[in-house]
Amino acid sequence: MRHFTEYPPVTLYIHFPWCVKKCPYCDFNSHAARDEIPEKQYIDALIADLEQHAPDIWGRSIESIFIGGGTPSLISAEGIDRLLGQVRALSKLEPTAEITLEANPGTFEQQRFQDFRTIGINRLSIGIQSFNDDHLKTLGRIHDANNAIAACETARHAGFDNFNIDLMHGLPNQTAAEAIQDVKQAISLQPTHLSYYQLTLEPNTLFATNPPTLPDEDTLADIQEHGKQLITAAGFSQYEVSAYAQDGKQCHHNLNYWRFGDYLGIGAGAHSKLSFPADNSIVRHSKPRHPTDYMKTASSAERIRGMQAVTEEDARLEFMMNALRLTDGFATHDFEQRTGEHIAVIRATLDKAESEGLLTRTMQHIQTTEHGAQYLDTLLQLFMPQEQSNRRVIPISSA
Image (spheres, rainbow, N blue to C red):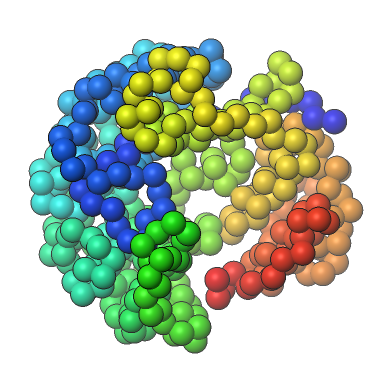
C-alpha cells in the first residue's frame, strides 16, 4: 500500500503554444502565429493558473523551470521577466534553479538572447535539428544553417555557458555522411548538452499523413552508432537514451521527469503530475490545448480539462519506464520516495530481470545492463500487467 514519508522533488513547466509556422513532423501543442501574439493576456492567464495551483505546491521548493513550446523565444524578455517575478512571488523558487528557455535560431530571436540572460534565464535549448539547408527545408524549419550557427555563437556571447542543441537524425533522404556532418558541426559550436534523436513519424502530423522516404534500417543504425561515438569522444556522457551532456550539465527538468519526480504544468495543453502525502495520492491533470480556451478558463476550475489518479500499479510501471532510460539507473530510495512504496513490491520482477541479464542491482541502486539498454522494451514488459504486455518488442538501438 502506498505511503509517502516525504515529498518528491518538484519542477515547473511553462508552455507557450505559438510558432511562426507548424513543422510537418511536430506533434507538440503548437499553433502558427497568424496574427499578433496576445502576450499580455496569455501571461496574465499563466499567472492566474499558477495562483490557482499555489496550494498544491505550498512550501515546496521548485528546483527548475522549463519554458517550452511552441517557440517561447517569440515572447518578449519583458513579458517573461514579469512572469518569473510572479513565479517567485507565488512559489518557493530555489535561488540556484536552472531556468531553461526553448529558442529557435531565427535572426530576430537572436537579438533577444542578451535580454533573456539578463532577466535570469540561465540555460537555452536551441531547436536546430540540422545544419543542412535542404533538410531544414524538408523539415519545414524557417532558419538556415548560417542562422543556426549564428544562434549558438550569439548565445555564448550573451553569457550562456549552458545551452543545448536539439539535433535530429534519420531525416528524409538523409545519408549517413550528412547526418555525421551535422554531429561534427554541432560539436564544434561547443554546447554543453546535445539532444540527439531520430525522427519519428508521429500520429496527427503532416509527415504521418504523407510519409516521406526515410533512411533504411542499416543506415539508421550506422548514423546512431557513429554519432554516439563522436559525441562521447568530444567529452559528452550519455545519461539517457537520446541525451548527452558535459559533466554537471544534465538538464535538471528532464532528469526530474525521468526520475518520476513531480512537475507542475501551466499553459495551454500543459500536463502535471503531483503527489499529495496527506492522502497518499498521485494525480495527473491537463489544461485546454487551444490558447483561446486556456485564456478564458485560467482563473477557474474549468482550466482542468483532464484529471486522473495514478494507481500504485501504474506508478510502479511509469517509474520504471522513465528511470530505466537513464544510463546510470536509479537509487532504490528514489523509487520509494516517488511511488510511496517499498522496492520490495517489485522484488520478484527485479529477480527475473536480473536473472535474464537485463539489469544489475545492489541494495541501494538499480540500472540496466548493456543488453538491457539495447532491449529496453523487453525489460519494461516484465513490469507491465499481463494484459498490457502482448506487444511487439523493438530493440532501442533500432527504434
